[in-house]
Amino acid sequence: MYIIKVKGIAKIPDYVQLRDDKFTLLAYFRVDRPDKSLDKLGLGDKLPDIMDVVKNLPFGQIAKLDI
Image (cartoon, rainbow, N blue to C red):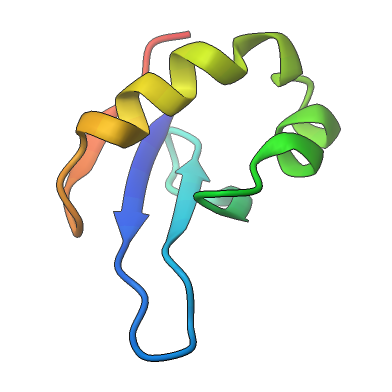
């Protein structure tokens, strides 16, 4: 799974994308509201781990997420 942090502009907030190995979009959520999207994907229990990666990830970078 891959994670990308996208910088928002003006009124558009920052977002996070989770993508699978074929780069298909699995989840797209606001940095400040990840709960519902991760729960739908079945990753609600991994929320603290994912948000630690998001916090340290620069905008526009793609990182491999091993969960």
